Image (cartoon, rainbow, N blue to C red; front, side):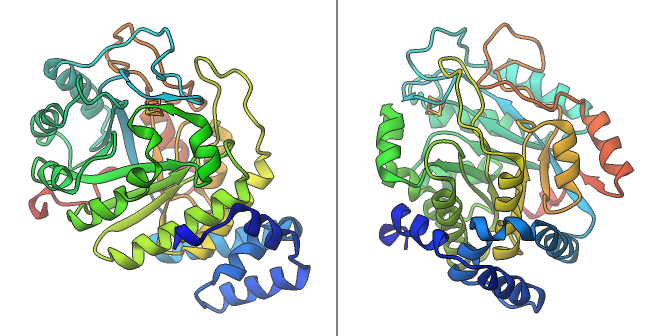
Amino acid sequence: MLKQFSFADTAHRVGLVKEEDVTRALQRSASGATLDASDLIALISPAARESLEAMARLAQETTRRRFGNIIQIYAPMYLSNECRSSCTYCGFSYENDIRRHTLTIAETEREADLLYTQGIRHVLLLTGEDYKNTPVRYLSEVCRKLSNRFSSISIEVYPLKEEDYKNLRDDGVDGLAVYQETYDPEVYARVHLRGVKKNMEFRLDCPDRAGRAGIRKIALGALLGLADPVGEVFALAAHARYVMHQYWQSQVSISLPRLRPAEGLTVVPVIPDRTYVQYLLALRLYLPDAGLILSTREPAEFRDHLSRICITQMSAGSKTEPGGYSGLPTDVQFEIEDTRSVDEFCRALRSNGLEPVFTDWNAILK
Ligand code: SF4
């Protein structure tokens, strides 16, 4: 599917969209039809910019009908910022001179306890790509130690083999987040300078390996700001639909983070808010059953606004460095924008008529 995908072709098709194509896509969405690739092209095109209100209304109805008034809450826990790969957009990149650390098992328990007392029951464990300092056996040990505190443990680590995903699932992992960063092979080669991450195909196949391993939740994403955004959105949507179709037992979520300044990266391309919202709305209409994730990278007011329309999963009270919750002196991957505590964030959700949900899964069924 993605092997035949072309960024140039997507950009060309987007440029040909007319107003009536947008109207047809919106009518099809309103009638409950499954949108096809042409509809998606119409909705991400400049021709749809004048239809944002109608897209937002449909997206809101779709989200409430499929997900109710709830927002699932999770928090990231960085286990390590050590990394042997070099990615031009990341603060943890190998050559950056930052304070690095890998949490000991005792330190992970301290971080977990702090998250637990804030009400967090779904944790996302993150590492860089350092197979020596954060091997799979380390991940296994952490997951086994933490599984009694959390009803859901997801991982966002280096790409693993199918067998590793199976073993980690047995250790308590039920979710995988693996963002492709960019689906454009040329850009992928340009921004991934060294390390395992250079292998685009191995990363692209992660969701398949996780799906075959029986991982219950799979999150895909593209980092907006590296390549042509319309190509990224189109490829991400196609990838997500493929994974949903192929591994129907797994819940698929998608995320579209915008590139943030980080160590070694001070100038980032601007994706205007209206354009960004248009992409999220188009994804919601094209993939009505997919979860949509919005992290604390985005400002508080913007997150509150989107939580009312199309988002279903949000992080809260996040720290993006190992030991961040207990105050260890290490450096962050990127600066966050929404700095509210979990409590403050949940109050904001409730004041907007939404219910924060911390546990969506009974551990007995794991
Ligand atoms: S994006 Fe991941 S692999 Fe690349 S430098 Fe950052 S932590 Fe390492």
